[in-house]
Structures are given as structure tokens and as C-alpha cells.
Length: 242
Image 1 (cartoon, rainbow, N blue to C red):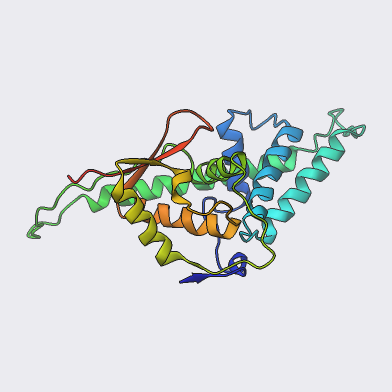
Image 2 (cartoon, one colour):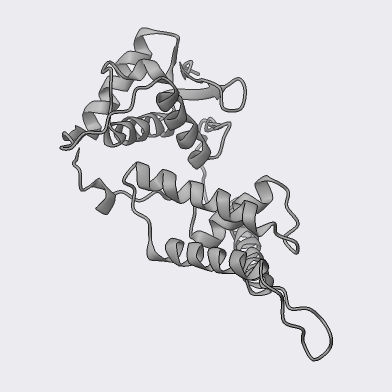
């Protein structure tokens, strides 16, 4: 598959199921009280994620932009005198958003419960059915959330002045990048994320193609990723054969 400058129309980042999922992630990551959301801080964090997606030319669905406008509207209303209800309580502009997040969290938890129950049911074997023994699958652990890992990798390239703004983006062959990363990792027991790029300057599109190649090889259990400290360098290791 070739990735061209129109990749933003064909590549979607699926770390989050929607804008409420992203907001809930931001709230839980910083252990924020969902009933007392610091709207300025959350709006800033949310917009940073959208800006990052734009930098990489990844598709931003309209619902993400809608929630961004809702956050900005709430932030503005928080600065104005708040109306008083008939019962004497002061209106909170965050109430509708909080209610939506709580409802979304309930549905998400219910969905997770059903998935666990389905998994439990799959462990029961009907009488008379023969199950052939199989090897225990290896669990691949990613130390960071996928989106945060991608964001950290991009920031590392920016810190080393490796980003190029190209007027005409070249094609990026994802299959070629997978083979390149596989060969590079096979040559060394450990290498940094920066060592995956021979070019002095790379485009955001080339970064996306390489990052997707790394994720695919992680899925194939060919390599794993480690990071010694937050925002530190990303190290790539070839997995040892079991």
C-alpha cells in the first residue's frame, strides 16, 4: 500500500472511539474529579491532541471538532456571571458535559463487563467437544497509551530538528517501511526510534508510515518497545524467540 499526501482521507487514528472517549481518557489520566472538571486545563489538553493529529495529516472527524467548540464555549461561559436558578442554585456550564461523560462511562463499563462475560463463556467446553492443546500466546505490553507513544515519538524527532515541511510529499510504501524496520531491528539487539530514519529530514507522512510499521511488527510479536522515563527516548528491541 502506498501512502500519499491524501493519507488524511484514508488513515484514521483509532486510539479513541470518539471525542468523549478522548475526554474521559484525559480526565482519568490526570485523576481529575469528573464532577469538578478544570475546563481551561482540559480544553488545552484536548486541543493539543487535535493539533497533533493535524500536524500528521490524520483525519479528524467532525464530532471531535464539535466537542472542541463545546469546550471553548463552556470555557467562555465560566468567565461570565452565572445565572441563578429558581431554587437559588448557581448554574454550572459544565453540567451537561459532565452528565454526558458519566453516561458514556457507564455504557463503556457495561460494554467492558459484557466483553468479560463473553470471554468467560468461551472458556467453557461443551461435553464431547475435543480441544487440541495449543501454545500459550505471548502478551505484548506497550508502556504508554498508543496515542501518547506516537506523540512522544514525534516530539523526539522535533527536538532533534528532523522534521521537514515538504511542499510535495513523496509516496510512502508501508510494506517497504515494515521490511526496512524488520531488517534494521534484526541487525541490532537494541536501537532508538531515531535510528529508524536514514534521512536527515523527514515529513510527517513518512513518520506516520514508519510508526505504523513499528506497530504492525509489534502486532506480529517481532519487536517490543520500552521507554525508561516519561518523554524520554523510545527504545526498540527484537523479541527473543520463545
